[in-house]
Image (cartoon, rainbow over all chains, first blue to last red; front, side, top):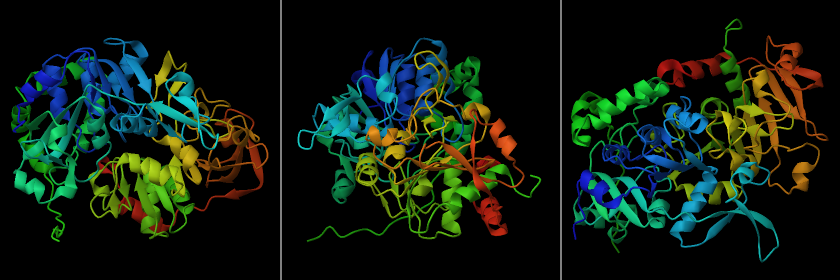
Length: 301
Length: 254
């Protein structure tokens, strides 16, 4: 059964004001096109979940979509701080932002526990750190076998996961290669799942390479085809990360006026990712991935 | 650049020389990234580079701008998910060396990358832990790279993101923290280790041109100095060539 939707339909039907929304992708496959559509639809009071809020949440915070962020590293990698995030945390501007903070390992385990339908997962991190002091959800637990003290984090069960990927079929069977981050955990932990892909491919193509499938279609509620949908992040085999834009973002986002101008021009000022892509044709060409194929494998028996 | 190399370059080469060929290294961004990639291209061709993004045995052909750069995947030995990286590699004990940086480090090697000031009303909100807290606890050797500035070297950090030796002495063992604690701090002025009894930082080596007075001036407590105090070997011509020709970032940043 086809689960194909437009981005406008998918965000409109599956993401509601006040939802907890996980939008993962560790540098790779960050769902910018979906985030921009949520900004255009003026979603409010979202609890946004990502290990690394990145430019995506900086933009969504600046646009007023977020009530709270659950995260583990909030910066612009190799460049500097996230200015909108910092404004909101340090000065409550444009609106106060609640934060709930872990380490990467802690965030990973929260999603893994959610995906496995467990109440919590134990870990050897956090000992001696001040993180448990400022986040009471990080607790100690005693191993019932050895008596050893460990730390633990509670399961995270978001309302919606938005997952960007290379390709899927119309049923939502989704394939990813390159860095997979916590895509699978985010999707299995969540109530609803929207997949955004660079291209929709045939069911037969998916079935010819089942090891590459990250999510089966029955776990997916909507599939959106949106080429260049992860820009300025990257998609392995499709386009490179727009590192120049990540550097420029520091300047753009330093003042609220620059941020507003950006949102006006590239989010509110376009009808969707298609128009964004057309206006960025030269960038799209510059970033296009070269071919580094691997040999096919034999699935026969 | 009065000695023919920059402070960044001597930090990178000093850090690179602390790696042993064949070690499995957890790589962060910035100077550690440069150091590990320099070591791999010079003395340590068999280093195994692991990035918390899930790239195993990466062989980046350009200097990765971030720890999730696509060049880490192309030609890597393997790619795994982040639950695997943190559980099967780091927590299982298969990472030999972890590199860390931070906004603040204190007398006992505790690191702060979370907030300056009070957590609830921060003066400066920093990025946060990322993987630093678990690297500080679960890597076998922990190397720290920082610029030596008075505000970055307070006697006590405002927030312990990644534990070092806590209050010093045997407090780390008392509190049953996993891992051995930090091994060395490489700064733009010298190299510091930790004394085996009090666990406080000790200046062990000065970079060319730096003085003990200068290091003391940039340190927020009365610093212990090793005797004899060593001089850091300057970068070699080959190290500088690799750094300048092969490991430059877009925009020339290091």
